[in-house]
Length: 376
Image (tube, rainbow, N blue to C red):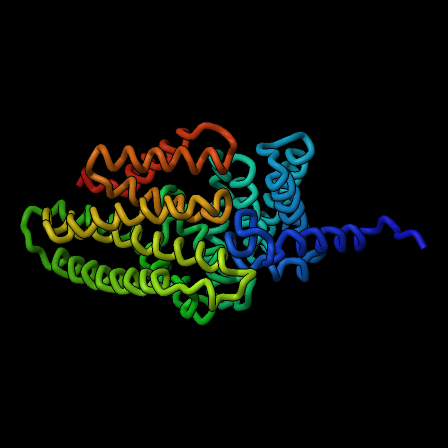
């Protein structure tokens, strides 16, 4: 019997394609769940319930298939699907009955992922980023739980927040988002929490250093707070460094040796990068500290080494290392060190896009501008 061309069958075909694309045994260099988030495994069961999620999933499946085949960028077919998905997503964000749902937030996240596969130098519309941030705030009041609301999607927005002033959460709002049962016990949960604090900490640091009299009570309070976060960051770094150093490929599941190694590399890189940013804020408050400066310089060099090792997992398996390189670029003080980082950036971008690197430097300089404390 010939299958009918019903919406149900179209949904089934999309679900099957997504299941294939989200296969955890795929090569780590092109893996989706290990690199973008395990919540992807929960999406097939949600298809057919949200037009925005369906359309965004279709874009991701198509973008990933073309990416794995070496076809980078947007062709006419993918562009058409992307335009449809953006249109449907805008409609959902304007509909109160659909806007505040896990499916809508997930659709936004999938569009961000698809953008990374087609043209990582292009930004997702600010309205969608603000919409996602607003959704996280509203959804927190309802305390959603489950794989669709895992840490992965929050991490995407936190990374965006560091380079995009369109996302503005207070320290308490970020804390409410990341400190819950769904994320508290996940690997890397604490350094993600620390990243979430950074925009608010930089704002407060600028404000307190504008006072003419130091030490001011607000300065003392903020310094103690940043020092506490720094101590926690150092503990995270030690933990992830130990995990990497003690990783035994022989005892690991054979199918996931590379997956686990790539994961430990990215966790340590991001923890080191978080430590660099926290140290930067503390140095600004203290004006100078040779011990902290030396520590940050060592962490920058360590990220460079980790990023060089991780090149074997390019393109997607080392995608998260890009943020570590951003932090290293931010924290580097020597021209020779920045040159090393820039060479790695070009290598990474060439692997990701198939083109000569260099355009991403604007993004790195954007991070420096976003976190700059010099104007205080």
